[in-house]
Image (cartoon, rainbow, N blue to C red; front, side):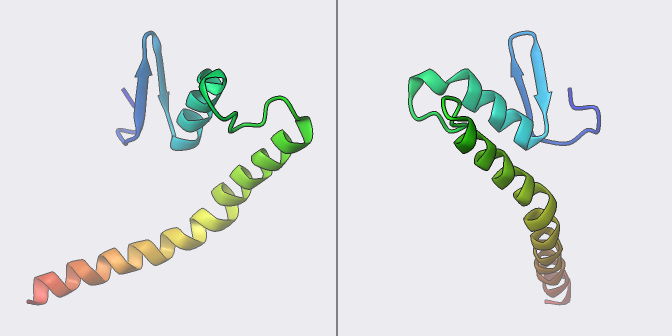
Length: 83
């Protein structure tokens, strides 16, 4: 289902989505009338701020924290092999 063979994948009827940000944006948009409008669709300034936060997370935070997480996982795996 996912062209790169990874998760997450969301299948909603005839629509198949991959990439977590695309999936969460789709769910937030699809269900915005059922609770809090997480995308701030009614207010263009707030919507822009939400998009900025998503971009910062994707391009600034995520690359930096990914390196830390991978290092922690590698250390745990190495310590299990030694034990």
